[in-house]
Length: 56
Image (cartoon, rainbow, N blue to C red; front, side, top):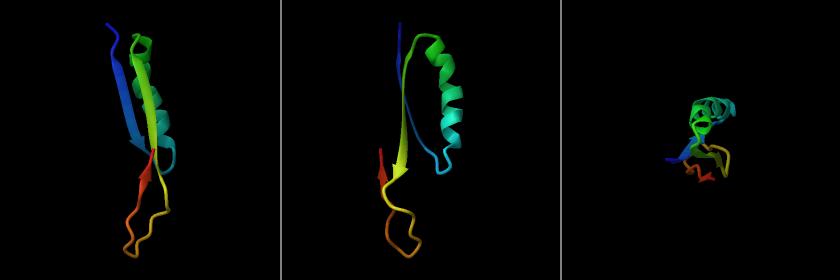
């Protein structure tokens, strides 16, 4: 029976994307449906008190 897997991740440098690819590959090979979503920043971090917003 095929399962649906959703992998949501945030990576500032992009390196985590390759790790997610390697982590989910056995699931894909087993016939499961895998959707990968990288969350990114809408605005650059501001350490002066404004909140940082995220986007998909």
